[in-house]
Image (cartoon, rainbow, N blue to C red; front, side):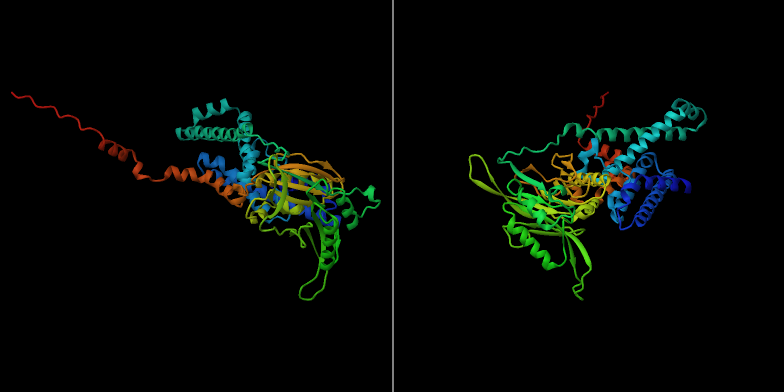
Length: 481
């Protein structure tokens, strides 16, 4: 088993070596952290398989079939909650749920993990049956095994068949439901909203390190065509809180007609000693409608409630209407932690997501995380990646593909349902814990229900109640002799 764990850890580390070289301050530290994370996840994975083998034999057939999916989904739910890279450490597909994508708003990533493990159970049984030979196996059991073992084997086959049917049925809604973007024509039920990413190309400004003035000049070119503009993560650096306030005021004075999401790195001092040296990454929404930022968010601390922004539209055969659009923000790696979004008290219509990745593989991975969070929350996310080779686009609301790769500003108009429902999805409301409990209910709940004692529904009691409503049979009169 030790060799197997080492082999899996080495393979996992080699597959992620290239994008991990520049993840931290030094290459050596990056490789060491990568090896440690892959080793830990490999040990946990083999341990889960071992637990399934050892304990599964003590369960009945249906509980045995659903035991591994429950273990698997619980493992990655726990790992993503404590891991420094969240869902990036999970052994689960990140390219979308495919036929099971409709489940994301209800069951979140736990549902995806359960589906993967359930198909693994079904396929392993099918391959094992094919390899061993079903006819020979049944013949051997029929001639040599006692009746109890034959019954257990038949029950096991029925449990696997039932699980397969459940998986196939869960794939049907994706064939019936459609998920396309809304029209962008203003109307009573649709609010068109133009959003854009401010990603100045280096060639245009003749230097690689872009300044505050560069981003302001690039934003001024887009303010007439976009209501929301977003800068990439850590676009500019401010050395003090005063410098931050001055920079945001400068952006507010020169950008008209748009709300600008300014992502920045701020040096801040210790409130007790007054000394600086600590840094934090944040994003502030700046507009001329307010002297102070509409919203300020710092990485890894979610805004409790989305901020409502007003959008004025012209509707045919009517005057201009002001429609509120709930907006919030999060930054890059935060989207790998689904649990962070449970702090939101309502569903936002748009989440601004500045990012900065250092490798195209990391950029694609983060885009996949963005897509998953958008589906789970039932919202749209504007993702602006300022890294070399980063991908940017709009996720959710029917949008699945990113808009572009690399630098270069862009604008896109999306449609938002009006009135917008701020009701949270089931997964968002349940904090991701409900799907875990449901997975374990499938293991033990059916057995508990089957052994529950409902005296009122016993067969003899039902017969007694039925007899109360029967007409008494006529007593035959005796013959007089």
